[in-house]
Length: 459
Image (cartoon, rainbow, N blue to C red):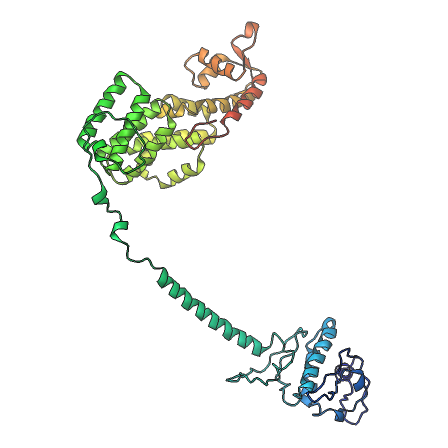
């Protein structure tokens, strides 16, 4: 299609050469002719009535800048978008014609319609200081949304909105600043910290539901005597229910009086050891958590001993994240300590699957580490037994199994195997285990060790 044919479809009745006859338009408008205020009809160049009209019938005449505008529009439009471009050009030129703005609009600088795929760089548009209400762009014209003028107006509007939002935010921030608190609303810990007056050495633990009464709280000198009494009672009676209740009451009196010193560390360490001895991991975990905070304050105690316990406790709960965090924060001095090194060796043996080394470390655990390992020794024995079943066929002696799994006697090993539904062979092979038959039972026994609750008990 030639350029003249393109423009003939856009401007019917208009020839590029003034001497040629008017051509018949290819499009027919279905809109009724518009009327002026006095009732007379206005000629619509796209209607049936305008077919064959001479350009002289339109006033003003079509300017050359309009022709160049159409030419530029088609040059910047792809083939697939030409139909859409024709419709948009009709609307733009019809609006300008009806409003008698053909010669007023600067067609050379007017942005191309939206249907144009390639937007050539246009001259910068200088915005008027004040928009005129009679502008051709606002009186029924179909202004292009992507025009430079529209973009400039949007940019200024967004800047104004952003400045207004910033101003409102600053005003709100000033409004939301907390007022000077009332002295009645501020807790004065020095004034509100109580000093107990109770002189009883023994007192049952009761969870506080209100502010503590000084007459029911024992002062520090009385608490020293209470600790000596509890040590003696534990050695003589070993009644953990009574001891645990008294220790929790002792810890409560220390807390409400905000006593944080070496005596506090001694109380928590002793309670933690007794809890380990009686396999109360929930109470031990509470003491361990508080001791970690107390050690960070620089108070004296046994931090290396309880660091080793903490590592073993994480091995029991299979908390790999906390193990890695602990290893990353340990100093060289802590890693070289003999007690801590033993716990790290246990972790290494479990990580590498070296159960021969693991059970040897279990037998030589320092301090009270053996009590913690007791809580997951059966789990590790089941894992080790599965490896023995795969490595040794067809049978294995009870004495060898008892030695490898760190049992004190063959009877204890037989009792453990019986709990897994594994029994020795009959007849002459009474002291041997068929490892092929034992493997499914050893694997099934691991199901009860899959979950650990928040206190550390496996269920």
